[in-house]
Image (cartoon, rainbow, N blue to C red; front, side):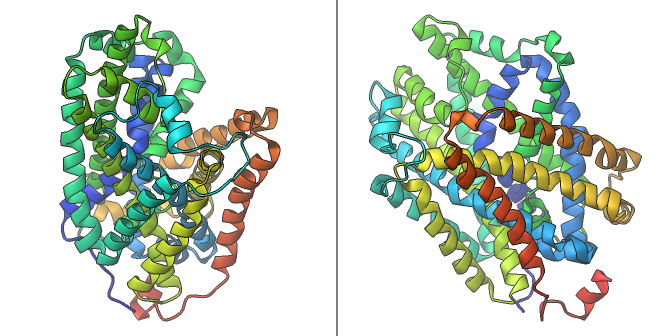
Length: 501
């Protein structure tokens, strides 16, 4: 068994953890969520969600990884032998996410090139769906591979596999030390330019103006918890895996606070930049800001190219900055997602890191080609919706309930984190994980199920929902249970066995 790798420095770990948290959702999801849920008033439930769910779960996962020194399956096995299946379930969720996440990063690579000369023309929507994605006529049709997507996709996977092959300190840490600061600088330049555009003030007013009436709406608070949960990379093994590479003397609790607030800081920066640009666009078109607000793929690849078209001077330069920001944000998150199951495979099957990286990377690459077909966008949309709402959220709920209620593991984990941290956590931490987080996540699950029983997501055909949505979720759970049935071999040395007892 290879000697377990470690981060070269605390700064390197924080860069990697923040790099994982800061992803595409920070740029294209948070601004719209905040705007639609009370504007400036949303920041109150958002802060409350950070303090009662985001940071407590981060501390939980950092402590699990640091104390038990293994991938998610191995760490949870050492916590309690009955919990190993949960670790494999989380790893399979990560595997599913990486297969389509890489495709979106590949789109961003293409659009970085298209920014030279604003090649998307005057109709970015038609350019994206017809010229770039060559989208199928009906949802559910797969069609053939789109060469224009396959080539950048293979490039993204080649970079990812190379970085992971280089290891934790020489690969992941070095990349994050370069990509994350560069991402912040690039996006800050975009924000500075955006806030100086005509109409930016109207956009910022729409973003920050508080609608206090919405503060009493339960859906706003659920939206805040959902945003924190999805943006912090919690619930699907990433933070647990990353913390397992920390040295024995590490300030767990402070690291969690730094990671959470650095992520939120970038989300706020993204919100300012996006809404300043949307205000400019609304001003150019002579419409209200609410008529141009968008999120997700539409914001990134349709609305922003339209905005860039209107930028006075050097619009191609700002297009390159924006889409390169998406590439950098996507790459730091993608690499963290893939590392989770690389670590799990390496430990479970007692193989070298090289073999684990190649087998994982090539398998993920092959499956990701499905999303580079004519029908790839529809499949991606369904898989993303179901694996997040019924995979990540459910796995996070199960993780917290098992550890807090059934295994009674919070006291031991609290003692471990407090013993090595300057900032100690007390009753607040246990109350949040025992009651607040399970109640909120439980309600989110109930509400998701209720909505999906009422009607198909986005009105998609039932067969597409079944195989790209429900089947993927069920297979990830069953796969986790089956993988947990295989015993651990030579990777549990004498010292590790003592920890598992």
